[in-house]
Amino acid sequence: MSVPFTSLISATDLARQVSPAWCIFDCRFNLGDPGYGRKAYASGHIPGALFLDLETDLSGLLTGRNGRHPLPEPERLADKLGSLGVDDRTQVVAYDDVGGMFAARLWWLLRWLGHDHVAVLNGGLQAWLSSGLPLSTETSEPRATTFVHRPQDNMKVDADYVLNHLNKPGMLLVDARAPDRYRGENETLDPVGGHIPGAVNRFFKDNLGPDGCFKQASELQEDFGQILKGGNANIAVLQCGSGVTACHNLLAMEVAGLDGARLYAGSWSEWCADPTRPVATGPG
Image 1 (cartoon, one colour):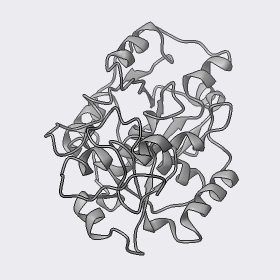
Image 2 (spheres, helix red, strand yellow):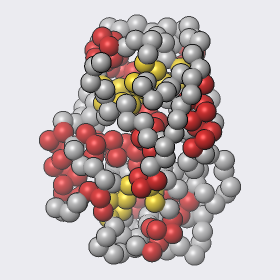
Image 3 (cartoon, rainbow, N blue to C red):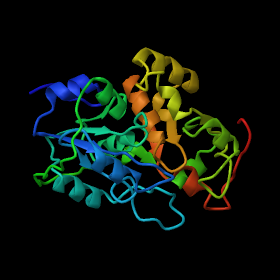
């Protein structure tokens, strides 16, 4: 059995090693056009890939207080993955067309459910196409199986944890949003602008090089080492607007060999839904 891919996989490696025992998922999405991903998948996808939608498959039910993309119920997600052919032995590969912005969400979710054999296609669909590899418009028929989930709840924290640890040395909040939104400027997705007090900003796109692929591990080690200021990665709690792009930072830390960081899945959209929680603006 080949060594599993657990963080990133190149287009050439995917093309060389893909087999019917693997599951490839197209995770393309657009926050401004929720139907974009399905349309893009139908117009052409990596052969054999199946589609997973951020809002209907990779998120839970909205309550108005739990953020824009709350975590799905583990049982529901496990049932969905099993129906699409994922079991304990399956190598999963996720891809999108925006540098892993949405594919990293599936990567983290599977890790949370106890499935480590999952990787993001480095460089996304663009890397596949630039390697001269084909697309398909055919939809494969999945072979349903049973996915046994074992949620790793030590990988995440909730709003109460964040509130109780604000400005304490045991927690370093890292916000993955664009710098202007972090500062409270140009907020178009959430009703309140700003950031959680004490959070530092690490824009998720800074994990990528000019070619759209993740930076080398050594570069990411240096980048996140500066953020951690020599501290252990397990004090880091990663968040963003709704718990999606924070997973990109978590993946980058995994590539860098920095294990133990946790996700605040509700992120800013959950945090600002409660007016009693404190808000900061400006550069931090």
